[in-house]
Image 1 (cartoon, rainbow, N blue to C red):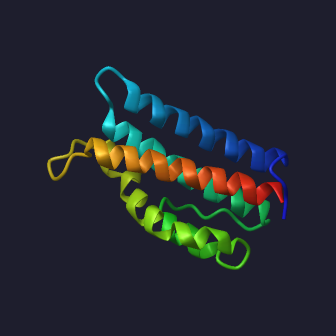
Image 2: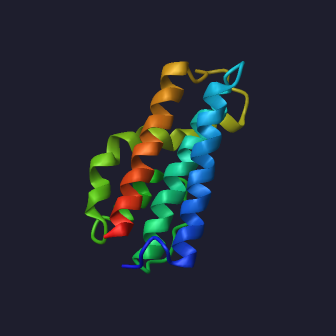
Image 3: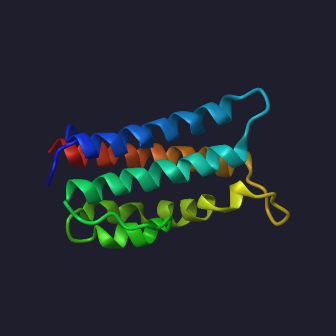
Length: 131
């Protein structure tokens, strides 16, 4: 498995970190941008998982489905499995926040949980890549 300092792995992690920073910033705005916090949280998780694909020298799937990505890492990175509930919650944020929501706009609680989950996953991925 490639390490965190591999240039391609590092590039994915840098993008994931940038999305997490945007998600956190969106929550702290004077008028919080809850949909953007959720969207960038999903993007954080997606890019962190894709960094693991690169590290494991597997083809990077072209999907936003975080559970599908996690399934593809089942053998090479079983440490991702406990994150399945968070990944299931984050996956819809790849699409829904990008369009006007008439069904159920994101709540502050949902946005805070999305940011927390994304941060925890990114931290775990960084630890996996440091071994």
